[in-house]
Image (cartoon, rainbow, N blue to C red; front, side, top):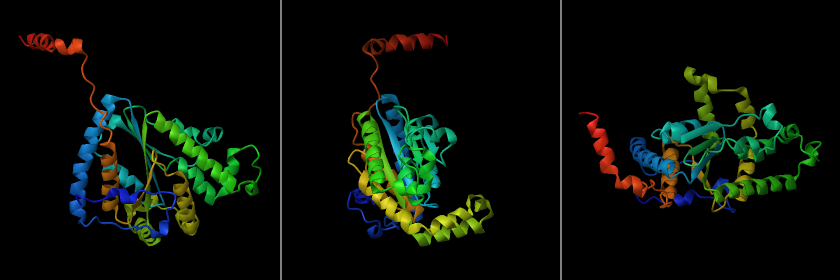
Length: 294
């Protein structure tokens, strides 16, 4: 695992999801994967402290995947050693009445992390080219000029949205946002098993909705829409990574490893130096504090 090539999970315009694996154990047991994750997240926690002190960059992590792909547990485990002040998590649900009175990117824009912080989007602005593409009738709630019925929503509409999202992310990057986008690639069979576990375990029942089964019948449409979205929006400054999600331990290690490997390339992110005037008087300040005990 030491020399594992995590760049292989990166996606580009030629992506074919059917050719990407949904299971990966990184040649290690669950116990070893968890121990490895502990080491990585400690390093990520140290980086977060430097990022906060440096305060010129922020980090946006976008998580997408089918229901039961493991987004919530991944967030809990990967960011466990972060200072709570340095990371913000947003889960985007069905747009509210207020959100629908703005353009579709507005609610995501106002949730972006401030400089020095990590922001994790659990479901993201990509829902606007995923669930709305599978269910184009949802677009009608946005009251867009020229869109009167589902028949007005053609391929040009989605191509335009891809362009708008690319421009949005380019603007963020140019202003100091380091962007990561992860698609948790789950198999249909593994989702079936996880939904059954939700039914079998009393403490997991609350997570189940009959709508999960309805959406499951649209699996093929969702895979097509994910593939299209990733192909059209995976850029050097805002890359997509397709992460095998059937093994949750492996997925967490892959995501954490990619984050640490890529963030460590920013060697300009360091704790700021004290001003010369303050540095020259450190002994004076120390003496003042020591006198207080006398």
